[in-house]
Image (tube, rainbow, N blue to C red; front, side):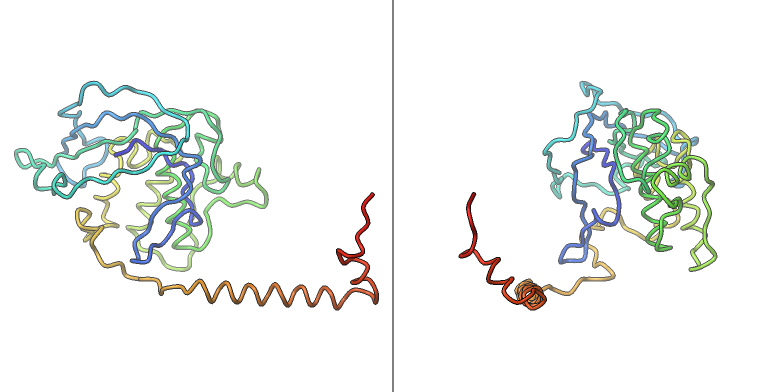
Length: 269
């Protein structure tokens, strides 16, 4: 909706709020682009990118181009402006609202090695499809505890991303729909990658997310809600650890060294 190519999705940048819902942080590498909102008609909610007809409506006056990372903030739609899927049904066909920067292009080499998309590494230029690649890496890591292309060094990792085929370990067991989604996200050719043309709508309609009511997801109760953290206790523990470290360091000094290092015995030159 905001025309943002995030470019740095990884577990460290996903925060869990006190209510259990997640939010993204660290937009330093993000690219904000202009978008042309489009209504896209598909014969089925599960239709692939090849089964989608051209947009029915294009808004006029939306310019193309991208802006470099800057301080921008998300805007929330009011409840009155939100509509359900049934509101966008035309003659029994499903009509999707697409307002994503699918035509964005950048030549910057940015990101984290294990999450970089192949097109960034090859220097071919990239667009919003890089976020769907990193989302695939993110899901893979959540399910298996590791990224799929990590090598013994950063150059080896980059080589694996470009050349190594995707493999799934035997354990832990992962459902076929989860593997299917990850395979679609980790297609090395960005033009064939899932969600490249239809954006998030294609991801939301994947069987992996069956049963999720996206229109009401903000009000859904998360499966896990973190316990409240008492930061005062953390500060007191940190203070105790600092004091113990200082005492240990002082006791390990030779006799007279502590007095010699005191500010009172400091000499100016």
